[in-house]
Length: 544
Ligand code: ADP
Image (tube, rainbow, N blue to C red; front, side, top):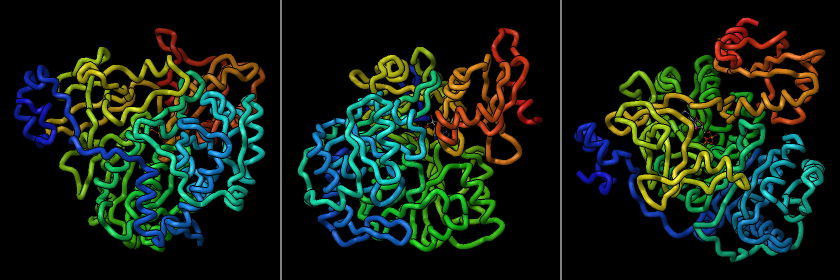
């Protein structure tokens, strides 16, 4: 009966309970309780360095770094940050392209006890400035290509931040030995900014313990413990939290990271060459890219070398893609990874070794040390099988949005079922299936994904409204014919040219948030309750 106290019980045993019993007994299904060692990523990395200093830790293009070399660089960065006054939990913005220097910089921040705040150098300076200001960031790591931008952002933010040049630090005489800074599991580890519907991005702050639990979950579920020669691709943008495990997990397991550039990914064939040429064993991509890869492979079939697990994340995974994958690669597992930045990345995995026995793909089962709930708007558990909001509690839950109490309060609440624990409400709808899997049913709000990037439609609409002359604005997704979805903006206003709007937004938003099409209308269509009729606009977007 007491299955809640017996989290190791297989899910099918729980399903023997009647629905009523499930309800009265708080049938929230708990992930397996697993040991969470009192350590942190930088400590585990240091252990790996000692265990095998000459193994390859990371590569990019033709450049390679051993564990010892990467560690020496990370240590230099850490010493430079400490020398510049870094204190525990102080954020450090890392404005670098995805290179080996970026890896050293990120690890250096962790080793120095700082909070890693990744920033893409192709982001508009104002956006970076807003992130620096919001997180009260006083230290910035940059490189020659991004130093000007970093200085501009610091100037706009009005912050008295110091900008350190990573190549200069690496070429300098800072010590290459471990700085020996103790980093506690309760300490803040990183901030990722995600789009915000009110117009300002939110900086989700997570702790080392949540990060470590997630990394251990990845190692377990991708079978990366105790295996020699694991190679994981680092493909995700550095402002997307999935980029973190893509480098940190292999480095915790003595494996190596293969950084793959974005233009290589875009060429598809180049990406496949990277997989095969570097003996990649584990890779992760978003569903829209899986579609592109499959279309390519169906035309030009080829073996994928040592690849044994492909993880797909960020958006709903359609059955059709799974069918096409196993038709071509029956021996390479597919993992549907589900989670959110606020809960230290993924909280559920569906591990597929073949076709699922349903006509849809679930997001899987609860994972280690994570409590999974499906609740109504009052946080009451909904009956088994009924739709509700997916919520999580446990070590995965981050601290909240940095310096943003209001939005933190809305999403991070007290877990009514486990006192003293915090719960994160995802805004996703889902329902329990009898054996403890969750079916993902979409979003409660207007958060969407474009190529895996998380976007709040409201943020774009609010920015459009600040353009002189724009009276109304609405943005919809055009699912179009293919898998590549487009953002389409509609607006009303006098004398506003689509090209001006595009340039305006490009100066304020990351490239993936700038709509592909802009259409001016006399007036936006309204529903009966006088809201903008997005259904009409969606249809219109498909025909214009
Ligand atoms: P992460 O970085 O952990 O992948 P983001 O914070 O970028 O996640 O976005 C989280 C949101 O993305 C989720 O709340 C959900 O709406 C969507 N999402 C993530 N993974 C999946 C998945 N496997 N299936 C469906 N939706 C997903």
